[in-house]
Length: 64
Image 1 (cartoon, one colour):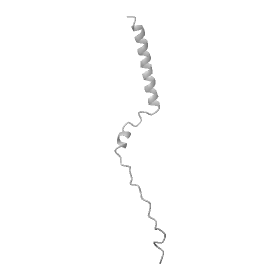
Image 2: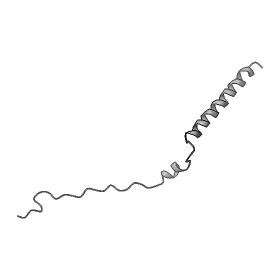
Image 3: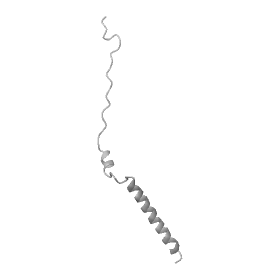
Image 4: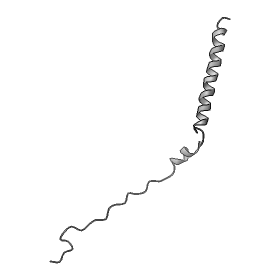
């Protein structure tokens, strides 16, 4: 029975701690976009790297 004097205050503190963490996550936008990151990996944004145009070497285009 004496353990209840310890467990009840600890459980109340734990509930308040969880509530504060949940409130902080709501205020900081942790739950704003839940599906965006899941679909972002499926989007193909990898464009092929454009190669630089080849410049002619000296003497290739000069008349002989």
